[in-house]
Image (cartoon, rainbow over all chains, first blue to last red):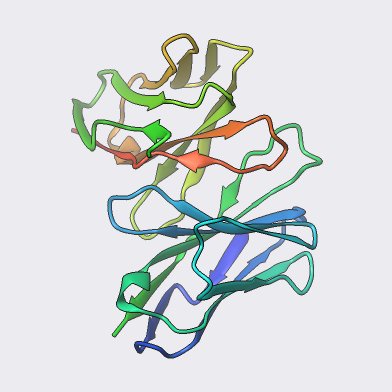
Length: 114
Length: 113
């Protein structure tokens, strides 16, 4: 089945220790997104890739970076995680070639910062 | 400032009855709306969508209504089933080609058997 896969599902890191979260997709969608969701809050868009074009949200901290080496993979790098970065990180994809721009989500990676 | 609001954090409904989940938005440029369902430990799953050119879209037990003048949309689930118990998010997008959605904070629905 075509899907959006996120690894790992749970990630524990130490304060200030860089961490990378990964997302892969078999949908062949050209747009990929990273969201941060904290408890009882709305998913918050951090950035998205339209093909190879990176689009950063204005309020996304510099601590967050992303890489998309090819269509299928996208990475979220947190350079120096703080306690406030503990959250669920959701990857999503969509296609500009589809009839709609519905986004399809992965299961998320829950990040704990000690 | 929250552009998409789901003012009811939770809702309990008896099995077989109607569930109505509400969503309000402030940006009149929003023209495409989605509802997602999220189970614990899973990512949001697309449920149903509506474009601003329509005021109603139906898919099985799920119907979304859009009132553009009131900037309000609602999701109706009839009849509600215990398996519908989840968190429901509404999301809205402008016709700007940015393919970006603004999400609400979600409503936790509990369907009682």
